[in-house]
Length: 168
Image (cartoon, rainbow, N blue to C red; front, top):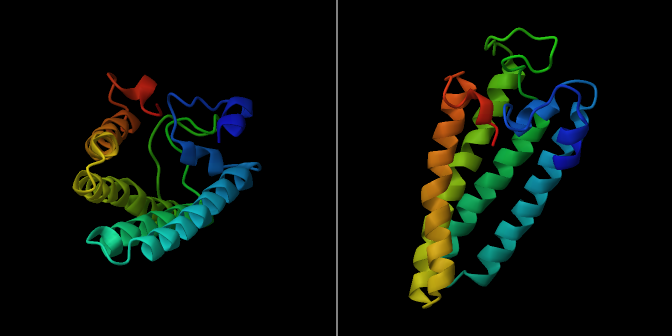
């Protein structure tokens, strides 16, 4: 998405979500990126399950990571709708009416909800293993991801204080 974002005319990674790259004639590149990332994470979830099957985090952690994978795959299958002036031929208002856009958003939810919960679960697991650094890292990830997701959503709603950095 980085290369696609810097080469896409009119795309501003500080202002628009990565999903906006799935729009237009080159949108297939971002959709494939979501699907491939989702498949990699799905296989990671299977590996987690196999390695953690006898622990408390052995079911819920891999299950949540698997839902993240399904979310990314679904977000890749269904393209998002235009958003506040992207692509540049679209008006500066939010017009999300298509079934594809709604499905894209629905599939995105497990990513933004499941990943922080999984991070919290793994933070507890690392703490039990006395791996304090990984536990803190996972806990901070679990706490900060929802905060930044909410701030981005406020920015995407065109809040003047956050609109210019919502994609960040």
